[in-house]
Image (cartoon, rainbow, N blue to C red; front, side, top):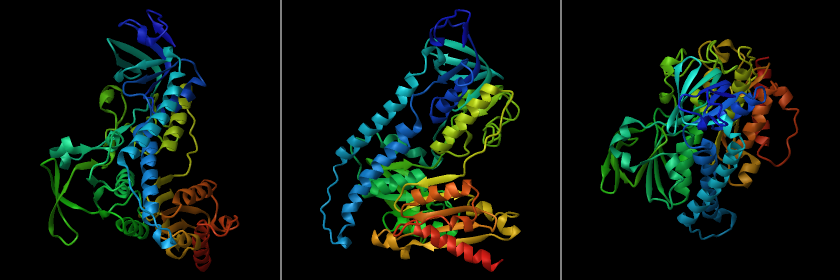
Length: 487
């Protein structure tokens, strides 16, 4: 990378009139941005990493890792509460301060590992400040005390996403938290109203409930996680509602401040008006891409209705422009392994631009770490049953297993939920499930999907006894019988 006209050793040390000329400028140092930068510098040393916010990934700071730490504590408490049917009698006491101390301590350890990786990047390849487009291929970076002009042959936008707060919660902002805030608590409140039935709302809601917090979850449109199969969605709602109050199609009329907390005015499922008080509201209503600071109106990019640049997910390129997206900012697949994959694709193609190569994307895999767990693989029920889709074309069958009667699940008293797989004679197409060990079942099925296996081929694989994976075989046998019936 060259810095002109001062030729300082670091862009951060260059004068206010310095111009940084590079082959690739990566904006954002989260999972996707770091992957993009590393992929780019493997091809060209003329790359710079630009970050205006807090260093460290969403996963390590406020996402995957701290949430799983909280869930682990909650599962430990729950195990004691449900041990009696095994003949094991426990007395459980939750020390909320000790719980949160471990969550924060271990979270900080994960964050340090990420920061160590960032620190290994040479100082002359990093700029700390917010970037915005001045014109296509030209960025202005607002660093401390100066503005830097960055001229790049290619740009990777990996600016991530932020929690989206609905207007319904505007009146209670001083008692409103998002997942970022939960992991900063020193202790736990007595009650929380959770808005949102996606992964964040369900995971944190159940974990807090198991740790002694009174929870009510309010959803919209009947959605439960990422599930689109009505049978699986119904099973998931039934299993989770047995433990905490969930209204997946809530009719919330108002949310107001009341004394030291908040009041939620809503109608119950019978249509009766209810008012319930909580210490806090937790907004888990989705995330929006961090695009506002980028001045995309000067980028020359074509935007979709959401204001996100239109891009090709095989190359991560925005139309024919030398601009590439990666990670949560594109709103395509907001999970860590996809962000890392997208960063690698974007970084390599940016470094080779204008010669870009399409990548073969991995099969879709999504997991929610509730109990029972929720997972989806490959094509969803909704996508396969759209007008003109696989169902309309004929030949699609659904194989199913109910975990209530699955052997190992009954042994563990975790026999809740179901698995539904979708297939044609030519290929296993996808699955949706809620049940025990779904994180592991999901991986097996995702690998089979990526290998484009048929149901018949999957049935030749070994299934040990007694394991939950035998439930997968039951569903496959059900699908196989239906495929033979339509022969």
